Image: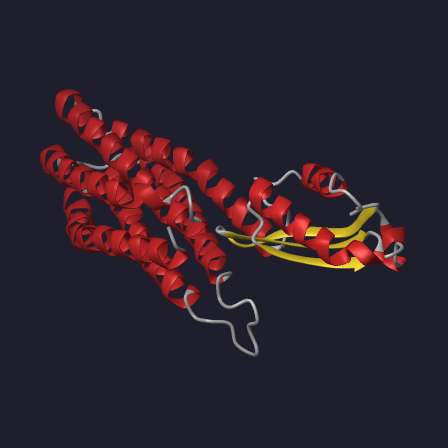
Length: 293
């Protein structure tokens, strides 16, 4: 399946998730303020970040399609990582806010309309389930889609938590349950958002992708007949779908063209590295003194 086709599918899924999420966000925020439920406000706030996250993901897809130019020779694919990092930062900010507000309410409980809280949460659960279904197909292939999916997934769990809290408040009258559920939602979201942020920052810092074992890449290159040395080796991700590699390779001058072709094939087939730049040499250059990497 071509990259353009996958991108079009991802954009369609994002739009289908965006419309019901944005519509329900307005309803849920109003309901949270009317009922006085922090858990419902927490869920509504997460839904607001869902809307922002999906909009960021859509913008990243549109910008990422722009072709390379004289100032952006790699194109705009890296914008996907900026969008995912922004999504992660939004989630972390919302989770921290909810934890602070929950602490305040634990010290000073408020009256809650559990019936309205329950029905709004059930409706929110249905909206989140639909959005998750729309985004599920693209989450394993795009870190941008993964960020949007994670936001909706956290909101889905939030809706489940609000339903439980509404039932307990209705049956027992313990309004403190509302704040406890809000805390649980915040603590669930924080580590997952941090992991997403760490992954995107690694890409923006041009770190080696998690899916790549640099030692295994070097060994595979050295295993190609005629390759005597590999140095100044760099592997990084331009986007979640495009991994790049540059390296200096020492090999006999008469075999350079053949060896470079073999290296390209090995790197593409074994490691899915699609953008490879090899500098063939007859003896190690000055960079080799800096180490094998």
